[in-house]
Image 1 (cartoon, helix red, strand yellow):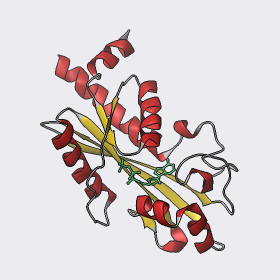
Image 2 (image 1 turned 45 degrees about the vertical axis):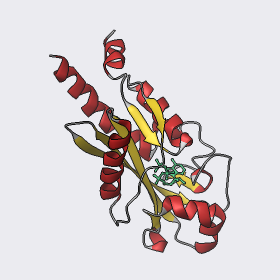
Image 3 (image 1 turned 180 degrees about the vertical axis):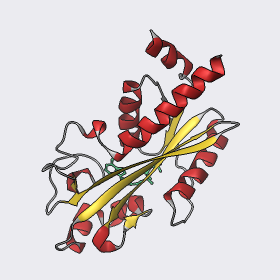
Length: 194
Ligand code: ITT
């Protein structure tokens, strides 16, 4: 009953992105926390910055200006230790250019990496961000069929890539940032109602 109430309260929330794969994961994860979202497909403006948080903040402002409803956006990065954090904030561009094949060719022994997700919420009064991280390693070859870097990222203490795991949405960087967001959002919606 409580979850149904929360879902009704959170109905008018949009996920703004050009990436449908991200939307499907965000939708499934938020649904498990009792929050419904709708997709607003839009190619967000991305500033050049070393900070994912700053990029996310600007993306959220751009998304709210366009959508004119409460929105969330996400900015992600894959940070590889031996490449001094590359591709990091350039993950989208690097995937479209050299792709997983190119990344694998750059790596030798040290394969440590982490995925970072920043979820930013924005409405007419509030702008707020939530971060989630997952440590792991880059595989030696691509394993499994999925989107983005999923076929080459192995979460720490596991032996399968994100593409091969069926529980990705219960442990990913995205799951962690959305969990923090959901706690805050449901609390805020509840206090607005009182
Ligand atoms: P937006 O329109 O939402 O910005 P985008 O794809 O450009 O979509 P990002 O800038 O956040 O999004 O891109 C980071 C890139 O990192 C993304 O394009 C994927 O290639 C990759 N990526 C992010 N999260 C991933 C995940 O969970 N699994 C695989 N690849 C991921």
